[in-house]
Image (cartoon, rainbow, N blue to C red; front, side, top):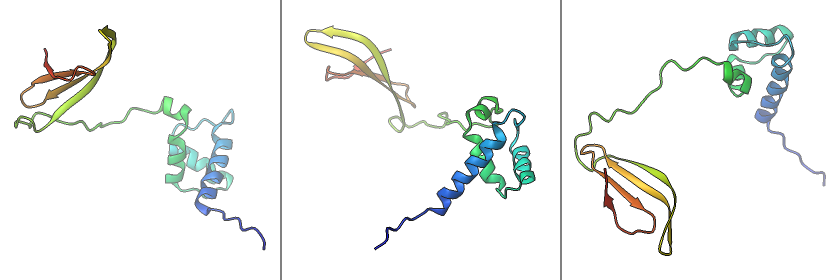
Length: 134
């Protein structure tokens, strides 16, 4: 019985795109600032890549990420409409210098804030009880 080797056509296509675009993008005279220019250069050489395939490849390149313009809109959460206490909490871990009290060493402290009432609670690992702070 002959061995069977399966080749994934999608992975093969991505590999072909990567090799071809590397040859175009990383040659000395081949810096393309936009996706459209790189797509045109690939078409002029004879490749039939789609604009989305070129965009996905280009966005993963470190050189392009450095010189890429910042995004125009960044969605952010709004906490102004939360009015019911204990509906939403924000939590963060505070890294402490290693305090040794007795046989316990405290390395982290959990800080939790209720968004509506702005009530703050901290919990240090190993203590076992919550302590109101701020």
